[in-house]
Image 1 (cartoon, helix red, strand yellow):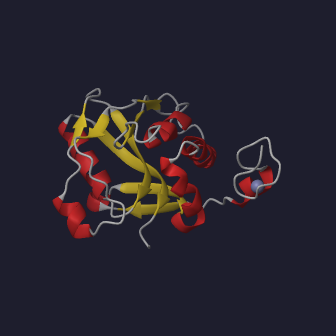
Image 2 (cartoon, rainbow, N blue to C red; image 1 turned 135 degrees about the vertical axis):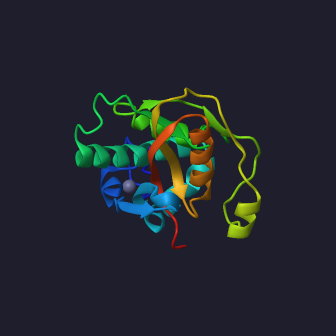
Image 3 (cartoon, rainbow, N blue to C red; image 1 turned 30 degrees about the vertical axis):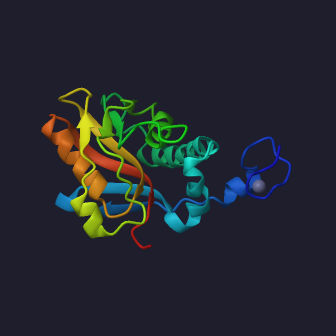
Length: 192
Ligand SMILES: [Zn+2]
């Protein structure tokens, strides 16, 4: 088979030389209430990869990006989270066109955060991509939480833009007795 990026022969989806070019740019963003969101890649650096999101191959690309993010994260935090019994929840973790984007990501972090798959889903099909802040503010995602209560959680998403989804998700979790520690996203798209 061929590398999807450079078309050279490769047994992997992305060949080792293209893989090396996918560089990490870790960022920390403080949002509402000083809630901290960490991201791993510049949006511009992986935009071409994120475009595969709604294709069949997207789940494999998301897995590659999430794996890189995880390896960086574990390298930074070491054994900080060992035996703390922290859970992970993906924002709107449900299958949309072939797979769940957040499901793929929390799976890659499952050796440190226990994944609660599909427990936080939007009650409507509003898509924020390309929409204005005003539109986002007046069209809430209306999340429904069906997971455990009284737990510590790390929230996951693929992209943070305005931070409104994370804000709304966190509020719903808090109302359900969940303590949200911080959020991890693959990419921060604020400056585009
Ligand atoms: Zn390649």
